[in-house]
Length: 503
Image (tube, rainbow, N blue to C red; front, side, top):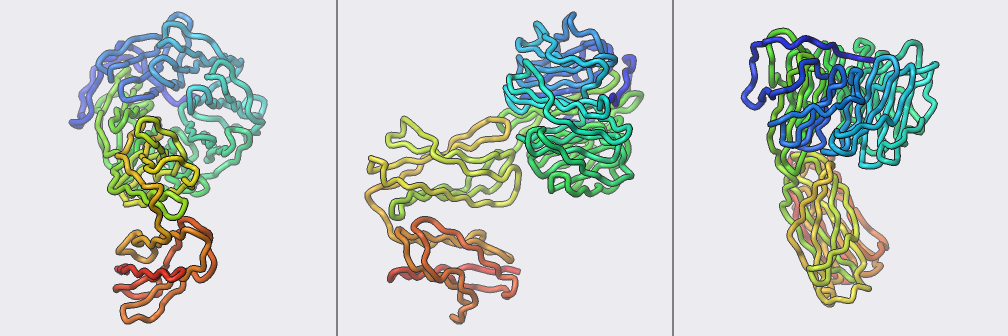
């Protein structure tokens, strides 16, 4: 179901905040949908088959719709500078695909009647699409061949006169959400095989805009802005944000939503919002998208008066504050910490014996976007590694596929410790912290916590544990502020570290 209207090109006066710039658009018809797969590449769809494309960050725009697309475009979803999908309506609904930058377009799906509301390609090969119900069933589609063919993914019954809204769809891995006109969002956790209805506050009947940053946190917009941190099981209204929210975009802890003639922004992961752009006169924003390249991004917003606005900036990438390695018994143990993270999918662990040829031996999930400090560990058995010196590095991956390689650390495979007790993290803490320790072989271990005068306040470990790295949590909820000590005893080895409870 459509949620926009075309408007003849008008002369407007603008109140544009310094970061936003108006682009020179070759279109004279309203622009409806925008998709930016990277900072420099963006595709836009509009009335009468208009498809605009830029590969230089909006400096120049070219109409690449071609003669094969003549109907109004309601949805655009781009994979890269060459591959893009658009859906057209009314009457018959079609999905067109180009793999050569818009030089040619191929019709890969058609239905009559029908209305495709959303397309989400999550990789070069896999993607989803959804459309308004036909014969009482929602149209849910899936592709596994790069969009060359589309097949029904489920039989999802519609309730009453339910319908969707164009561009109100989001996908993260196997998780898919789409909005409706019936105070509910549908969600799938298995790539569209099954669906559940998630009801949000009835006052917000329509879900015009929808965006999730990961499998849990997202926002929907319509008559109000609603947020969730548990994948949509519960929704909370954002105070004061009301009326005709038709698009939402995110990168890291930055969020944007469009509401009529204005764009609003949050820089604290949706906790607070402020107006970022207002364009006075006749006309309104229809859709918004953000493209990321490394630690730089560009936000593109399109309007029903054929206007395009963009805003470019950079964010702090994953800030690695420490990275070290050691050998305990047969295990190489890696430890690292981050001071902050933006768009962090996780870390590939890479090993080498000569610093020339690297092998990925593991993966540790990151924390997405956060300003909190985080500690990570990884261990592997290197008893079969035929090298005295073993090198390790981290390959940090963003959700958009960009990667950054850390410095290299090394361990001596012939010099092995038997036991280790690490500093708790975080420290100081309130009220919980984590203590890590290592043993080379299966051993009886005692790990206890004492107050400043030597009175035992907690016994964390008292039994047989296997070889390797172990972590145990300590909760000081019932203790007062002050200095405490934790002591590891194993096979004659005794070590004590100090920690601070700060309330």
